[in-house]
Image (cartoon, rainbow, N blue to C red; front, side, top):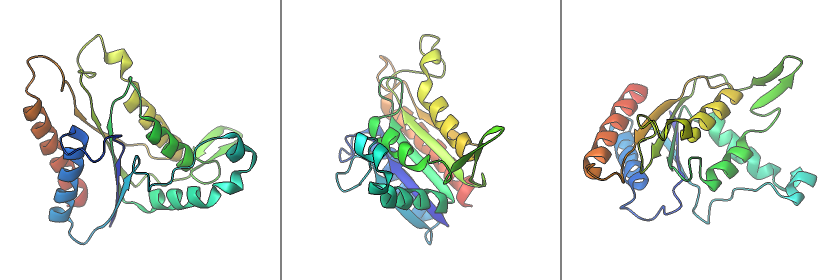
Amino acid sequence: MKILLINAHPDYRNTARTINQLNAHAVAEIKRLAPTADVDQLTLYDPATVLPQITETSLMHPDTVEDRQNELIEQWKAADVVLIMMPLHNFNVVTKLKDYIDNILIANKTFKYTADGSVGLLDGKQHVAYIQSSGSDYEHDIRYINADIAPHYVRTILNFMGISQMTLIRAEGLDLVGNDKAAIVEGTKRELSGYLADVLG
């Protein structure tokens, strides 16, 4: 089994960050549940991680980034389980996750255009979980429900590639007065453990 674990936190070295705690928890649970699994960890904000950006050069000369894009696409397609871990920034995905998506959502590689519109080229058998941390409650607070853009965006991208199911796991309300942040994080860890037990069992 191949597992792709994507950490999209800009402060990826800070162990106090919720996403990094969840990332470490996922690694430990994978080792416990599937010790022989092949795990790729992709830390998007690590300077060692090469993520080509859309620029004048890459648009005019796509061959300059094609090799790296193919590496990222093949890594994505090979994974049986994908975990995307991201802190919410200004209602949407962080910039490095957008850069990553721009490298794997490529016509004739993960989707194609037909006379009837676009068609995903993936078989839909991958298990994909999007794990999001946020200071506010975007699931229940009526002030923020319509601003819950990031999960919708990620679902749209996945569906475009042929993946029709996405599990959403939230650590939300972390900065709200009166909320127990530690308890929220522990609850999210339990939810993540349950998800991994289901897909790895």
